[in-house]
Image 1: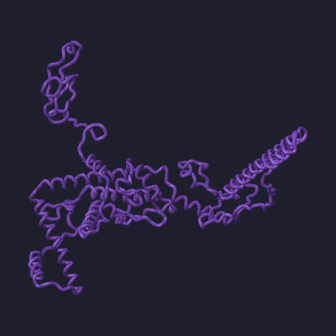
Image 2 (image 1 turned 120 degrees about the horizontal axis):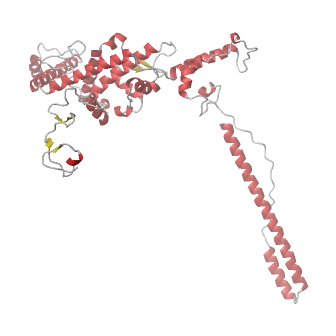
Image 3 (image 1 turned 135 degrees about the vertical axis):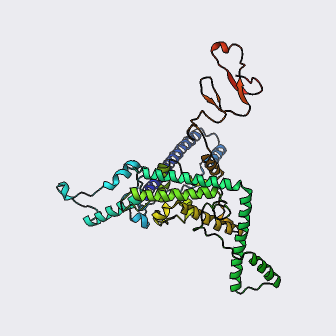
Length: 459
């Protein structure tokens, strides 16, 4: 590239020199023509001279017309031939043996499916002679091995499809997640359980404040007598109270019928679902891809495998970020991104199999985030898109027909009317059979019509 730019600049300089040379030649020709015309003028004046005074005047005019600035002869100085610049390569460029091209010889899907079979020629293939021009045989094999290993890490597996085990796990999770959300709605609809939960949350908050005071006392901080009495009264109310442990309590009832996920918002449900999907995706990849040189999913291919296995897109912008690696930062208790870009699981396969474990991790992260927000740390506030909330709300609403699910088999919805052919019609408020119809339509075979109560509204 550097050599090409130098050649282009050299060609531009040559063209400029040619243009300057043409300009000089044109000026010399014009000057010669002016001198010839002046000589002819002098000869004519000399032949027809009438008076000496007129000749003097003519000479003066001639001198004034001929008078010019002295010419400066432009001599072209010999220039030394310019040498092309020497390119300086960085460490990464020095490792390259081949110039990267914008257009590859093979399309990506074909290359990803076949490059693992690439090999160097061997004597078993009955070649007459095998010569290594750029490096020795050992160096060439080492280069091939390192290149192959790097490609296996950064290239994607094109033929990966979800298995029956994978689909069964997704089904179990979807069913359990829906049950938890229904229980949360039931809890929020019960004011008695809500009140009991608020009392428990207040006690838990004061319990943590008590822990902080004890730590400050150990550090030697002093407090007033009135404050000490108020704290003693508050501590007496907490006698025997122990906050529930997130990792041991029953997720459906931590006390007074309150579920562990009672305070989940749509962001918490989204992160819990993301924990399951990424954990399952990494586990499925390790099961299907047994090549030891493919240790896991590369961060640049998370979206591809996610879309291929879950049949939906992973859009980082819905999480308020731009890359899949930044999405994984929300669930560091489940996955970490290594220096080489590979996703590494934090949980074991046994822990991943426990679906309640993901819910407990989500609740623990929610409580920690809430404590930081109450302490004034706004950097941990989630900024998920409102589109995600709409998608999650729609995905958990019951639907019939189309892509949402099957239509009820027992004659349609409750209270549904019937078309003359036996087809169900949704019974909406104010939607009643209308025997009247515009004149002439009955004779054409139209049956009784249905419409809003209140009369004919048009056809």
